[in-house]
Length: 349
Image 1 (cartoon, one colour):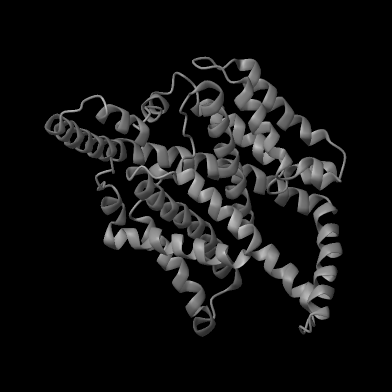
Image 2: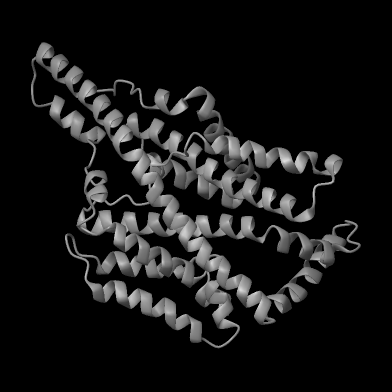
């Protein structure tokens, strides 16, 4: 029951409430303070409610995301005002071309729209990618750092998480054993791996929660007020170029650890770093695909929602999709796929 009340997806209600309370051009301190109060009040909840509140996907993670995104939505935020400029849709371009019946005039208008649209996307990408990436990274890392720190302190000082692991892992071992898998020392090994790589695993789960919260707020705000406030939109997310060497170095260390007898702590840090940066490069790859679709006036949101629905029924699709997006994001450093995605094809009339 606790998980149902405080966990994902019902915790997304906080993001929906924030979108409903938002007023264009004005964000009251009462809204900000209200969400901050709810987050702080969770520290005084009885156990195990308090722990469930702060688990990945829990309400605390969503509330922290809402607070930070409300700051980004502020009308005083210059970056947000620049990002909020709506790009022309396929229907708007079609309506513009239908205003004249002269074929030559229509051709001139068509070519002008194509060139203006191309320049707009290139300038938007050149000016806004870096600050928007830093903005989204700040939200991801701040929320994860606060949530993970709380869970780590909770695990050390109270037995709630430890007892949950002791309860869940034997049940998981029993399920594997029923499938004919050798599960000798499974619980101990699984507990050891979970603790060593908890930073990476929780970052994956928190990032998904944060991105879905921001997506929910963007969609509701767009439908309710017409405001375009794409905080967390991945079409402007691009990892810094130097980060690829850090990622590759972190990948190499675990591979050679067996031969060089690398101590456990550096090896665990490297693997956690690989998991975290792997997720960021998946976001980078999704951003490239999103740009490719949107520059060509394709409904990227509906396409990604369709992929998500498919993965719910065919989980293996998620593995190939995320692997492909991570590879695309990493390969962008060497082949600059984003530049190619920004070259629009002339839309059909």
